[in-house]
Length: 228
Image (cartoon, rainbow, N blue to C red; front, side, top):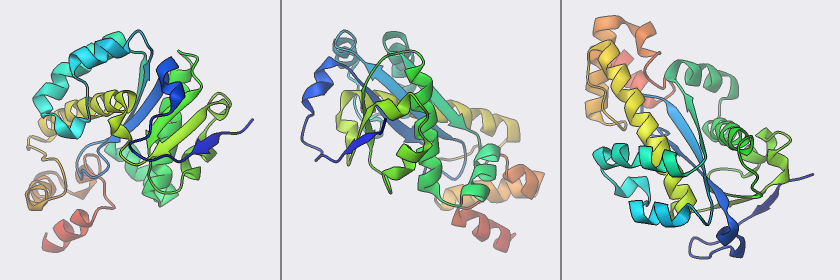
């Protein structure tokens, strides 16, 4: 069996979404510190009203505090799967794969496969990134039987928005734990403030420790090591 990949515009709605679907999204892709997290959420006709009551929407439009409040409610009403690739493992995988979109495709496929162990669903919606074959080639037997729709701004779909919240909540929790471990507040993103925090970690703990909390292929690493 093969995956049927369909491109659709951000404002079009597939008629099958009303019978239930899985949404997939990630967090941490553009953050120097912390993990890459991919979440998959199954939304059924029964759980959709609950998500609307919670006011689920794209996590980028919600404060961090509210995301952490909403995530337990989403986990309670929806079957879900979260795959977190910690910085150390991320760096190992990136060294082998050498392509962020291919790594993302691998993570999306793992989150989907894990959720398909819990639910029967043949429609999956994900945000479009890179070559759509990155996800397809990483799917296993169950995943190859679903219809996968990748589209820009997929977070407009409720299932993808719910996945974006779970992914961000897990990212924030893990980033906080890493901050506590190294005794330095680790900012989000890849800004000048992030460089300053990286330099602090490098000074206190060395390059090897930095590689356990940061995505080392970012340009931030070169900037910090050169100045260090």
